[in-house]
Length: 320
Image 1 (tube, rainbow, N blue to C red):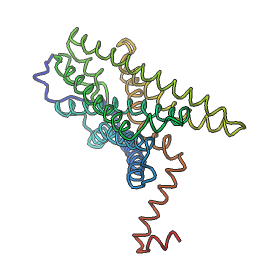
Image 2 (cartoon, helix red, strand yellow; image 1 turned 90 degrees about the vertical axis):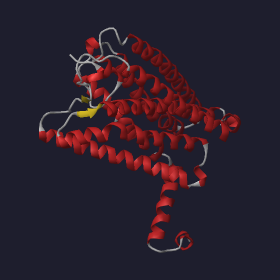
Image 3 (cartoon, helix red, strand yellow; image 1 turned 120 degrees about the vertical axis):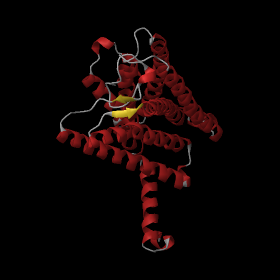
Image 4 (cartoon, helix red, strand yellow; image 1 turned 180 degrees about the horizontal axis):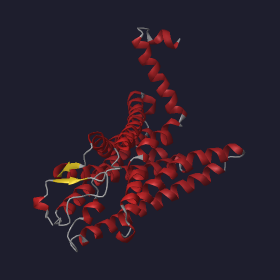
């Protein structure tokens, strides 16, 4: 038995105890991490450098990519390092910082996804009012509200979680520090307040999900009015992929945080955590941008400019 004042570090859950599989986990996570860095990095650079992409849709996409970079960087590098060096340890302060960062970025990303669904709804269903509904000032205010809400939410949960007395050891049944796993090692009945806070947060998250679903249903209906097969294809490509990622993110996250302890197991928790913490940041660049012709054209133009400078060719000569 121990208490929180005597805990100086936590022990994270390893993916495997076999050395060969630990190295396999390291290389697999490294590939996913590099793909996420490359995809989101290209999106950020392209949108920042191309004036034609300084529109509400790409402004929110830029915010999403920034959040995705931070989101996956909070958990994956530490897990890779633990597998490489065959260790499980994370310091008390490091665990608190990881929990805060993860909660902050996850919450802010969810609100940005909600705003992006509203942006697409306004652009497709209310095109005549789009400039009024999503002016530059409104976009900045909405993005700032998403980041600020995520920060306050994370601060509240982190302070509340780490104020609980911990008397069931220091082993965390997860490959990173998250709220449900810290609650498991807290003293009996001491976590009721935090669980109540999680339930309230889940209700708000469900409300946002209903709004997202409503927005994409309206978009789907509007796009289907386009005659011929093109309407069906455009409706499916516009609505299904982003909605699928949102459903994966929300369903696995809510299941992780709200499922009863009776059906909890380390293997199930591990699979769910990978699905909502590792997969979305890696696939979001493909879902939201690499299928976007305007963004791909801007990326090709940017790469052409870099190559032109590297080869000492003037840009004007290249484009001519």
